[in-house]
Amino acid sequence: MIVLKKILFTLFLFVLLSCQADKTYVLVEPGNLEIENIYSVSTNKKWSQFQENDYNFLFWTIDGYTIQRIVFFKPIEDGRSLFDHDSFFNQESEKRPIFNSKMNKFEIKEFFENCIIWSREFTNFETSNLNNFKIGDVDGVSFEIIAKNELGLIYNGFGIAGIKNKKFYSVYFIAPKINFYKEYEKEAKKIISSIKIL
Amino acid sequence: MKIFLLLLIFFITSCTTPIGGAKKVDDIKPQETPSIESIEAGLWMQMNNYEERLKTSGSRLKDKDLEDYLKKILCDLTSEYCEDMRVYVQDVPYFNAFMAPNGMMVVWTGLLLRAENEAQLATVIGHEAGHYIKRHSLKTWLDAKARTDLMVIMSLGLGVGGVPFGGDIFNVTQLLQAGFMAKHSRDNEREADKIGLDFLINAGYDAKEAPKIWENIIKEMELGEINKPLSFLASHPAPKERIDNLKEQAKEYKNKENKKNTDKLKEKVKPHFHKWVKNEIRLKNKIEQTEFILETAFKGNKNDYLLKFYKGEIYRLRGDNSEDKKDNKEENNYDMAINYYNESIKANEEFPNAYKELGLLQLKIDKNEEARANLKKYLELAVNPEDESIIKSYLN
Image (cartoon, rainbow over all chains, first blue to last red; front, top):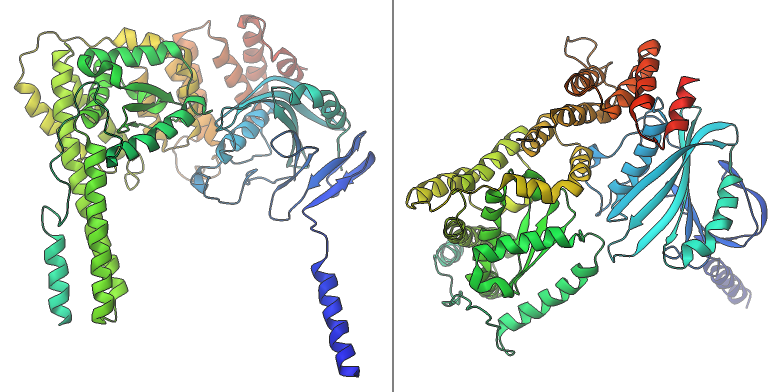
């Protein structure tokens, strides 16, 4: 009987372990918070945060990745790229854009744009309207985004980027031009304006 | 026994006409559509679905004027088949064009950047139309299907025969099969070349331009990564052979006209030209290769200052390699970029962007006084520059 109890208890533990919530998405509550000790940020809405250690970024979304997202890139150092992992969709790795901490503000924007193009996430991706932008105490840049995916869906967005301690930081918001961009633009601007690099 | 089986396989695969291979397929007639129960109708249906997706795809370059222009070239070449084929432009920075069995032709922007004139472009368009008229897709498909059936039979036979390394032999036969398909495809390509040249000359284009586009591609391959041939050439005759064939065939014709229409092509691609140049630079191919492509694209262009400027951009985008070049006396990327920007300014003193890039680069290498002067000059020359605040942040 004791043996049976032990077996049942072990099985119960296994069941509990298998019921562990999938940590890929976590809920972000309104308020001030820190993202992986990289950024501090504040939000007035609830968001779902996607996080996977394999990726060099995490993102927030409300209705899904394709509907709207704020992407927070983890910092990268000299000689690295925003997408350092190889995938079926990537081009040859030796041709990926490479970060250099001496990049000027134009090159920061260019590097960001080239990385997204290199990832082939969009069939068209352009940035414009480059401006000075303070990310906390970092003298960074802001820019607007227009993009198109393989299905022909047009996206609008904006992003910020900067260099701190020789590391590249960037965050961007993007949503389909039809309906969703306008709906979330204001909130996304508030969030991105609140960002500080830790 | 094993040797006998191996010999049998090699014998079968070495037949020029494969067992069960493609039967004689007639040319498609103008306005002909395949009967609904045919294999060809199935191919058409698949490509029609693809075409529907392409129409709204983000990769399609939606420039009606450019597509109409390409369609007109196609119609001038193949008047009877004009209404049977459609042309789409896809925003992909590589040299390529392809024709689907249902009459959908796709031209990549990398080809439009590389064609020096309309005659060269018409060479490729006429060639692709040749594939449609000769029903090459159907032939290739029938041939592939016949060979695949044969492979299945052979693999079963090997399995039953108990050949222990049957799997490996199967791979060998697959390799042989692939070799045949490439050969078959190359025959189709030669046929399409011949038809394309007929079209070209009958439409009054300069036949001497036909081999030139391939000569440029050879040059580009030699300067670039030769072990990675351009996708268009993967199943095509070796460019050298193609050039020789085209030159030989061109001698047979008495040209009625010798039109090249260089300006017409340049005018049509003008709205996209700078974006395509940037996309080419962004590919980070070998520097000599990219320089050659730009030189070809700018041939006949009076704006030499722009070519110099973009050459500067090629080097700037490669980043600082001064450490690597320290021990030898070669100029590093930034030195090269600065030289080209200076040449651009020399060719056109009123071109603001060369001053901007030169100034920004000089800031990086601590030539601050010169940098400031060039950035100020940029602000003087640029009309309402949207980056004024950024430039000023570097001047303060």
